[in-house]
Image (cartoon, rainbow, N blue to C red; front, side, top):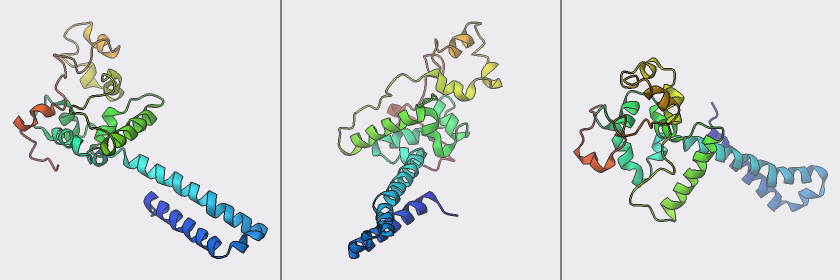
Length: 209
C-alpha cells in the first residue's frame, strides 16, 4: 500500500528527474508538448509534492510522539503515566479514554469550526520558539481551558450525567454545561499535569515512556 510519505518521495524524485531532463535538453520546450512537459515539471508536480508533504506533516503533528519530541514537553509526557486517579490527563491516557497516539491533540484542540487550523498555527509558533525563540520557564495555555473540550466527549455520557459530584447540587451540572463552572476548577478536576511535583509521584508500572 502506498503511504503518504512514499507518495511525497515519489513526487519529489519525479519532479527532480523532469527538471534534469529540461536542464539537459532545454530545446525540448520549443514544441507544444515540451512546454506542457516543462509546465508540469516546474509547477504542477512540485505543487503536488508540496501539498502532499504539508498534508503528511500536518497528520504527523497530531501524534503524541511528535508533541513530546520537544525537550520542554518531556515532563508533560511523563505525567501521563502518573499512578493516581486524581490526575485527569493520566487517567484519560492510561485508560484510553482518548487515543493514546493522539492524546495531546485530542485534549488540546478546540472543538470549533477552525479548531484544527488554530491548533496548527499555534504549533508553528511552538516550532519557532523551539528553534529560534526563547523557551519560557513555565508553559502556559494560550487561553483558559474551556469545558467544551471536555464536553465534546463527556456530554451525554452516563458517568458524566449521573455523576454523584455533578449532581450534589441541582445547579452544578447545568453550570458546568454552560461553562459557568470550570471542569478543572478548585474542588473539581483541578489536578492536571502537575509537572512541578512529578518527582514525588509514582508512575504506572505499565508505562512505556
